[in-house]
Amino acid sequence: MIVKIQPSNISGTINAPTSKSSMQRALAAALLYKGKVIIRNPGYSNDDLAALEIIQALGVLVESENNYLEIDSNGIEPIVRDVNCGESGLAIRMFTPIIALSDRKITIKGEGSLKKRPMNFFDEVLPKLIVNFRSTNGKLPLVTEGPMKPENIEIDGSLSSQFITGLLMAYSAANAKNVSIRVNNLKSKPYIDLTLSVMKQFGMKLPENRNYEEFYFSSVDIENGIDSYQKKTIYYSVEGDWSGAAFLLVAGALAGGISVTGLDVFSTQADKAVLKALMDCGTSISIEEKQITINKPLGLTGKPFHFNATDCPDLFPPLVALAAYCNGTSVIEGVSRLAHKESNRAITLQEEFLKMGVDIVLQDDLMMIKGGEGVKGAKVHSRHDHRIAMACAVAALKADGETIIEDAEAVNKSYPNFFDDLKLLNADVSLPTNNKQ
Image 1 (cartoon, rainbow, N blue to C red):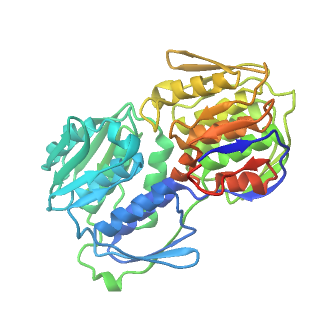
Image 2: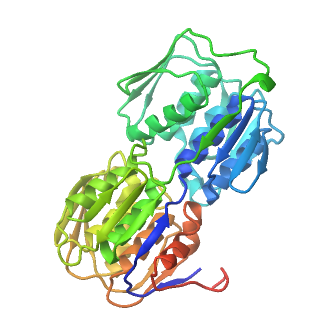
Image 3: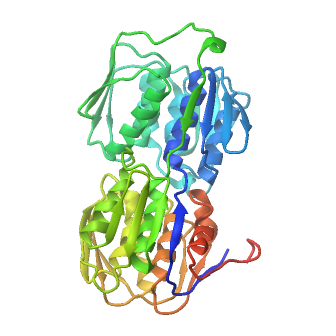
């Protein structure tokens, strides 16, 4: 799909997309709950749909109503031998340990860029948990055969916190007792907070969090043996997504005053840190409990900023778009977190923004964006990465001339309505009449 964007002034109020981080964790917890769950404000991005297919493949019944899902689960009772995680990195990392709770041999597959992502973590960890496991030279497909037995383990948390999310949920579901998951060099701690928050809301056994270096499961029993029909129904509302909303907020900072609703400023989502970057560069912003308002665009007054994105690497793309319009060199830390995304995002951002006249220098763990020298409209490519497509679109709003984004349908992975929402904010966006253009 090709999308064309003309320089625009935007205005209006828009609701934030739903958080796939929140949605997918809720689906995993619903699978393990063994009872009825009502999920309100569900997401329907490609990653969300992949997680829905996974829990259905594992035996869960799902009914979709107007703005909620009704889920009935008896736990993990696989009805197929193959599970497909689509292109969702969270799904493969979170559900693999959960699937390993089953004593059936299950093959776990994926699509697109997920096939290239390293899965060596599971080769090292799952055999220690008495799982018959193998990968394909450290990549997909994976084959598991449990049941997994919680043991004391020590793991590397530097690649992604999503691996730890899956282990925490699986240990809890297995009623782990007197065992610890020790973690070295954990990144993205706020996402672990989100995982623990979801687990708490679903009544799962929680570990003692010892400064994110050790998660200790005590000898206390959870409520085993209770008939699922006697359990109370769990109601869970999916949060608004700070990752997707970051693009909207940056768009407002560049191209006009807007309001974004449906966001929780008390959320544990790491990407709410975008507010700090916006304020540091001089954005006029009003923050309320459920609404963020950009009062007016920066114009020529944007100041360069220094931001550490180690715990929130998904903010790199929108912040690059923001930095392109700030007067000077902005610095973003945490480049090492970008290698194993849908693309190698550091290189992709450098190459695609260079087409728009923005010079990006990569040095060790730093990304330096030389802003204030003008952004030009250009033909760019998403590289099949949703966040690259959105970053280019936001940067295009004040570029000199038309911007053409190829393979723009990549946004469906996390924010299917992104371009429609830009149009609702009065951006000049031309969408094809069909997705084959």
